[in-house]
Image 1 (cartoon, helix red, strand yellow):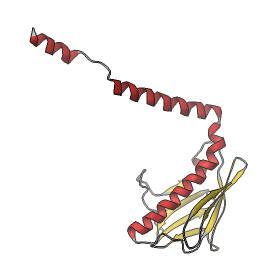
Image 2: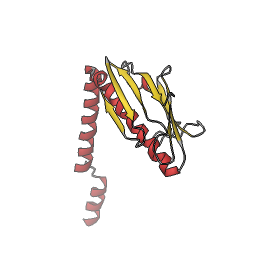
Image 3: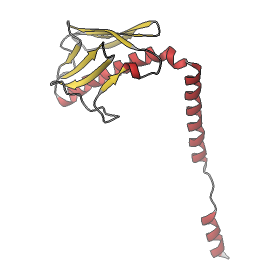
Image 4: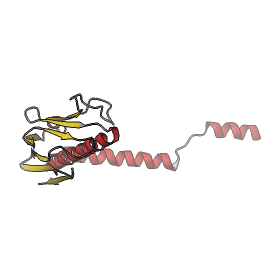
Length: 166
């Protein structure tokens, strides 16, 4: 009798509470994403999201320069609507998440959002040069345009403080 109970328990399958909660969370995320995409809400926040992503990538370049004791470049291209985080020699770094070259094409980030780099100016150059101490050689700003709004991402000279304003 005891042997048959063990065999039955091995064949009985069920869903644990943890599995059920994970499923509910995944469905909620997918539903939220679908609603956002279908309602066009992503177009309203695309510019702000792109500005915050750029600020985060600039902070990454600063931290990477400090960690590796090596100068870093952030090269902007208004024509292509992109930027790249590079070594001092101009070779793109490997993105820590995607494991691909660190090149961000803003025009392709949000379908239909038409995000553009209006200007990028760092001491008269479109390249932000970050020293081994994480501080830019010359401060400056990038102007992003999306959905009728212009976003300014500024990097302070002397401190490297990054700020975003609309």
